[in-house]
Image (tube, rainbow, N blue to C red; front, side):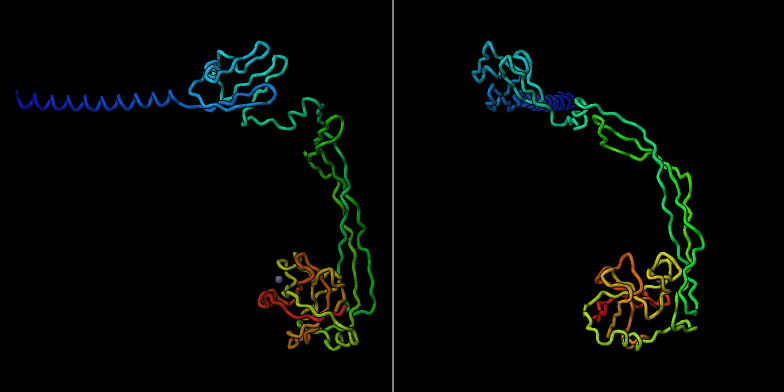
Length: 324
Ligand SMILES: [Zn+2]
């Protein structure tokens, strides 16, 4: 034999060997898939059920394997000459009963769909006109005058808007209402009031100080409530108050080292003494003159003349003597 022939025989042998292995593996695979074992639930009339292990898929085969005989007054679902379906359930029921068909779990039927079959659902588009209430704006023109006087500069007038709703009714009962559109027919006119607040002492300097001794004297003889309050500082800037006029909730202009914002638990006019701030221009004496969105009853905010000083004050828990 020539060496070339020897080589080709070697190659053919190799190919045959690999093919045999492949065929062997395929046969195992097919056998394995044919002998797939299923767990099938068979339910009988009167809610009795069993689960059997079977490699068959034909209903009659599975019943025969388990020695189950369908009586003349009974019926089978799926039918005996068909294969079991994805629910892997065979239901035997009396011919007078409806067969209990197990629904696929993935099919979700919404409550609305079910209700819709029994209840008439109607939808209507409804248009309503709603008044827009006017806002009252106060302008503080405090002067050194001695009289408090409020002047109405502009009368307020309510606006009007038209709202379109999509309303859903079930048996004539409204069950859902969604706004489709809103149209302003008339803008409200704000009421503007000018206030002149009576101010007793007034300093022309920027760093106004208000007599701590007067505050101290005003609470003489009162017993303070002592509490540790989370204390921070704010200024009249938009960042701190959302406006820039420095007018407090009480209507008074905020004053540095005097005005504090406190929660509704402390009435406007409440005097607060903070011993830790006794070295400050106000000697540690403050008056509640303002409120704030983020202010709760265990927090107070001290008014400062600049944002920088408010920031540098930071936040600290300080002992407070509260004179309500
Ligand atoms: Zn600020």
